[in-house]
Image 1 (cartoon, rainbow, N blue to C red):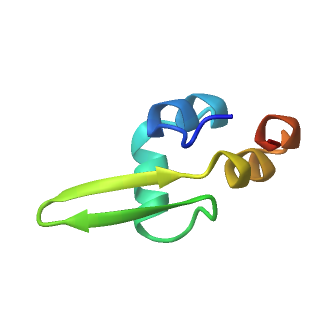
Image 2 (cartoon, rainbow, N blue to C red):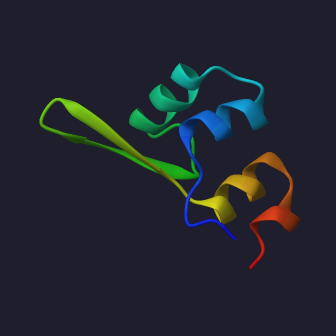
Length: 63
């Protein structure tokens, strides 16, 4: 299993744009990851387990 999922991968799986995922993480609206602002740059972490539970594909999130 992967250590994390990229914003691009998450957006493709969800059928949304990358900006949707970024803003959702920044505002705490998406429960599968975090967004941290360091100086002027945002960093994102998406947990594979939490993400696949959220989108309904628990098999992918199992280890």
